[in-house]
Image 1 (tube, rainbow, N blue to C red):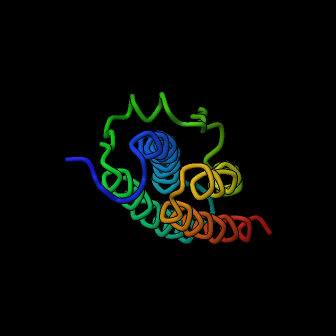
Image 2: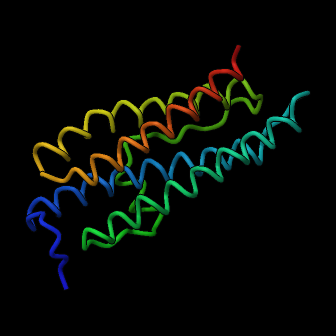
Length: 157
């Protein structure tokens, strides 16, 4: 049964497509953060291992919220790595170094990509698709990524 929530079918589908791309970005960032947690090396191993664990746990919650928002709009959230790789705007790159500086820089760039891409979508959700709920939801995610990016950036000081 389709939701009767005051958003047209076409708008709900458009919103869901954009959220699917966000879900793919979030999942790839989560995987890259897990990679950092598993493979960090260096004198700061212990503290960075714990730091990356905190970050991937936060991303796990974000992923769940994005998928649930997609479901609340009446669409299905994919759960396959191939679908995520086809939809993401992020890139996978071979790990050249496992030190905290290299890992933090890459993760920071990915958070900033998500921040910038989602900041652009807030007004589209609210004004074009007439869905202030998703606009507010995305605003909250941008704030979460800004906080996570700040913590990554602080590691580079």
